[in-house]
Length: 416
Image 1: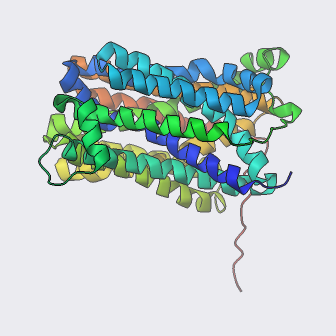
Image 2 (image 1 turned 90 degrees about the horizontal axis):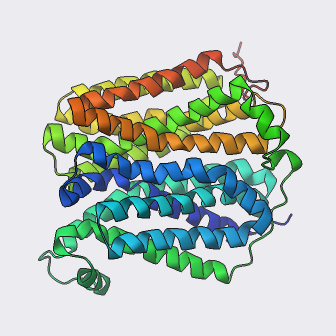
């Protein structure tokens, strides 16, 4: 199929929007705790509501795409996310926040299912690997920028900072002075609305899935559900997303609790650099995967993540400020390596298996909730020690995974 450059760049923009909406929770959780007068255990339900939507929607979304096609699903996804953001922006409360985050999570889960096959079709199969990496760079850029936007908003809304832009003055009429962080959800609603109306006028190419890429609830699902390795790799994705969100969700809260840093500035910045270094790590990971076995890379990076997290939890303030982002760097290759090891370990039903693996994103719901619950009982530092459990499981994947296809590597020959 002929390449469609406009649609390809539109997909990159959608990657950006997904990340912008998804990874802002960590920086604003301290503000939510203060505004809603909740403890860390209850705060853990906020990421739970968002990421449990992935576990619920991943496989159904794959089936819906086959029936209703890509454009309708894109429009539906952004409409659901828009309604979720608008609901919370208009009525900010803890219960509304949970409902809102679940709706936004449903929209984002549906988008994740649509955009990767669409990127392959629009950008061309031969460019898919490159475009996938580029999409992840846009994803990482948004994760880096969204905490910066949060800091900007709380420093300018209802503050005496001289001349203000018209859109800032407009937001001040909508957002209470005690809840300046809610302005982000007005921005989210506006972004989703703009993308929705843009998509109405865009001709989205139809994706023709190969037979092995389709999700089936029949024989393929039954066989995979009875496959021990499928469950083990599902737990690998569960463990990775749980670890990633378990760190990102609680960075700001940890720093304000144990080091008294300002969560709206320093805490948000540390969170931004966590995602920034995670993106940089992806680039280094691509190089290493051309030189080393993917399982070796996974083991080495997992050890690095464990060491970094140890310094972050038990070091002094300066160590924590640098160690948390460093842990993001070492987490960078885990998702792609575990996912590829999983798909390279089966000979068929890759579409259905991908749906099962994507359901493992529900780990981002469960692990932060467990960390918050434990932290509420015995302290957040000890609660975050639980993250070594999923990290230990990811470490083990590097030893028991036996892929049928090894990652292709460059063989360096010595010069005589």
